Image 1 (cartoon, one colour):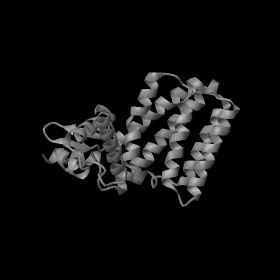
Image 2: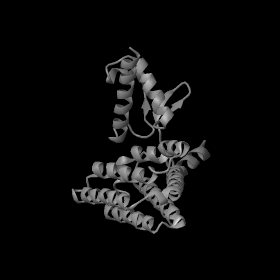
Image 3: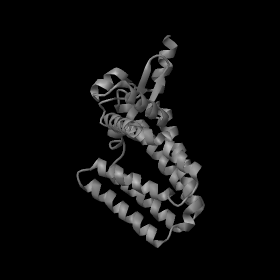
Length: 235
């Protein structure tokens, strides 16, 4: 019985993430337990468990006595989350670059080619995102440190990436996206530890800046840090 209950909870977790990515649920939206139970035609127990798990992995936040809401970010939080991701990935790759061989570079270049094909296919953003995730996972796959691996999975960069999925594709020219990943492979081949770590950090810093800048200009539900400051002054 417990397994069936867990399966239902896991499906609700997955479905809510899909609803967030598709913008059915937007940053800052309240997620009401009873409404979700009706939506998924289930009792409130698995919904409550699903919301708890989503809170633990960072997709929603719990407000005392008010329930849950979809997480939202300030511009600084978006940029900071990508900075942290760059620090983690850059360090992991610099420590394991000696374990990358010619066959690994062939595999990375195949992924890069898939990225290029996704761009050519009318900017297939779903395929592009899948390949981007595969590319970056490959970069850290040889660094066997469970703490670093956990940090990589839970960094808010991943959450921001999903929350602002719709805007991410528009924050940078996708041809530039391809060239920036190509540069990573070229630098990796030098086996220069310092250059590799700095290149990864620069890559993430630039991505976070581009996304945050686009969101502040174009997304009505993006939480502007200046707006928070202005609202607090009014109060």
